Length: 224
Image (cartoon, rainbow, N blue to C red; front, side, top):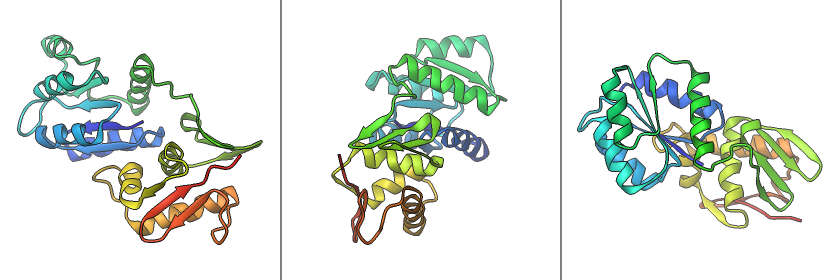
């Protein structure tokens, strides 16, 4: 599951992205009509959050363009609370409308509600072999063990579990964990993998679950 947030206000973009990532959602960001549309087409998010005032075209125009290509939920996020704006957003295909200022808890609750209505159950665990990940609870189960994990560890495992038994390239993991324009780098990813291995009790020399593929990426081994 992945969310796209489009806002030209760098501070607001950081606040919204942080709140969603803390809730366990992978987030990619954009700051204009053009980068937002490109991000939607390349990242294929499960939900998009749009500001109305964007360089290169309005959030209304971007909403309409996205709706022509996808039925994924769209939330308009703006400081403008006029009824005319709300009606226009809904007529263009938006599913919800949140006016600034707002609380992060309200934002996350509304996002989860939209995802549920779209058929994405946040509580449904992702499984591969004896591993089961519940992203909303930040909980990893290995057989009969329950392991508490961080949001970053959850996003890392989410992609690895979805591609269990296959090598996931480092660049793809960086984009998924820290966002398309995020601050992740290979050293941070290496440290994240190291902490996760320690937490689950995996031996890097003879890994049971998480293998490093030199110069390529990482692979989650499927065990029964």
